[in-house]
Length: 311
Image (tube, rainbow, N blue to C red; front, side, top):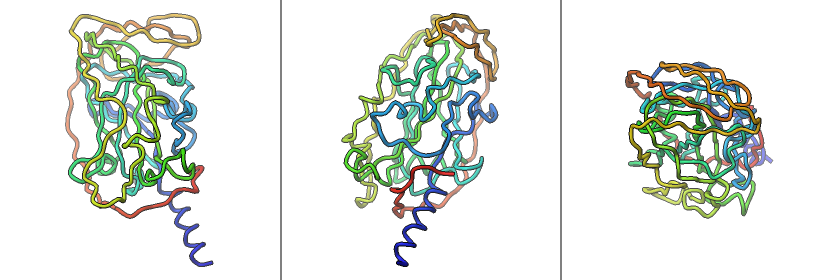
């Protein structure tokens, strides 16, 4: 009886401390403010997605709901996506939830993104015994990456995901109580610049990810883990010149407009029914560096098999 109560207590602790979702975006180290349900397509909870055949694997629950605003950034800018657990600047995600962080981009759509439209622009897995999640926590919840400098101007969705591997030794397909845990989040962006590179990897998450992928079916506790195969395609090369190119964006509304472009990092409001965007102005910003916060690594296994929702 005591052991069963202990197990239940530990499972509840994981409900409280395990999971994460996105709070805000920083452009060249400038905070764009709380973006939840404003420029981030925020899920209602921080629970993970485990069924890769479901459209929610792309932009999470409610990922098919376009939001009102866009973050404006220039091609080549430094971006930081800030994650949190329950409140900003808290524990971010459990240290036991080790795994990679991957970032993808696609031309803007007001749908759920469950199409072959995605290209990978950043990935971080395991390096010298340190996981991307370890670095995320040490950096106060922020994952830094750089927009390709050759990226064509236009409206985009940028999708970042954490993949927690603490239960990935068995696939969700075999045991739905376990399996890799995905925490995807999609952010609406308006990119300025004179580049001509248009994302063209045409990756589809529902068919491109499989339960047998070595980066999705992975035993975190198999011993001295020294290597990890990151799932998905290679990072997109973003080849392109400096000729002015715009990105066509699609919606289900059937009207068309050309939004105005600002020349500094800012939030812009989207008009309903946008189908195309022509952005040609360039933005100029200055990046600075931030100092990570030290943290203590935890390597013990935590079982979240009973989790269906979190506070």
